[in-house]
Structure formats: C-alpha cells, structure tokens
Length: 172
Image (cartoon, rainbow, N blue to C red; front, side, top):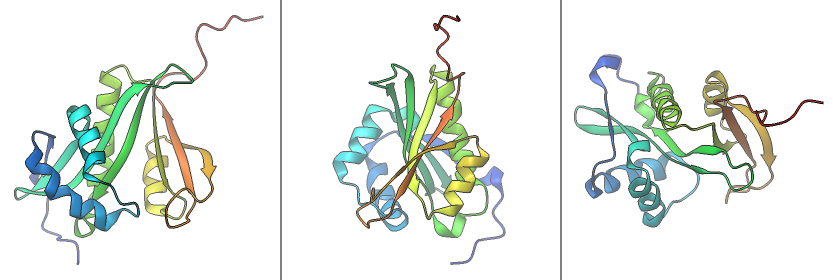
C-alpha cells in the first residue's frame, strides 16, 4: 500500500496500554511486520507488566504503530535497563517518523524512571531499523549468529542514558 500523503503528525495520537481489547488489534500487525512469532503470553508479560512502557500510535481510532518494552535491573551489571521488545509501524504509515516518535517516547519514559541504558535486538538485514536506532544514539554491541528462527543473525544495540563507566571506581 502507498503511504497516505494527507496524514499530518498532529493527527496521530499516542497512548499507553490500557486494556486487553488492544492486544488482538496489535497481534496481526506485529505478526505481519516482525520475523518472530510471539505468543499471547509474551504480549501479556510485557503489556501487563509494564503498561506505561507500551505506547500505541493511533490514527482515525486505529492502531497504526506500537512500541512494547520493559524496565528492570540487569542481572550482571545491576543497571536499570530498558528493553525494547517490539516496535512496529504499519507499512503504509512508514516514513512519517512514527517509529522515531514511538522510540523517543519510550526512551523518555525510561529516563524518567531512572533507566541507565536501553537494549534491543534487530535483524542484521533490517537496515531501516538499524539506521533509526543509530540515529537515536544506539550502538551495535554484539552480533548474534542464527539468533532468529529464520536463521538470520541479529545485532544487539545499546543506548547509554548515563555514563557507562561505574562512578564508584577508584582512580589509581
């Protein structure tokens, strides 16, 4: 489908997850746009666990994009780590900066909650996503071989929200 040139960014509304009725509306969109299948349990885990970190983009009362993630303490580093599990914009609404706005809203919420870093994974061949994330300050940290069910490799990307050097380190 072609992009609708009449859409104005101010016509798009952004809200957080509110109730179960939103889940069946986003599942087909995410299934169509992302390479990995997600079960209803995955959606429930993120949406009910961190409803304020699940942001929906609406146009004409229809969901056209979503970012879903979480914030918790990373086991190894002890840092407050945000995680973007899924971010999708319907194909016909791409190139309108909706994905960038969703990602930035997620970043802002993680900062507000004291997050120190944000991580995500994306397919190494998803050049549009890589450009978006790198333009937001994410850096490739690791390449993971055969990460996806398709056999494709992934990059783990990280955005540091605070200085990554431990402030408690003593200088010599």
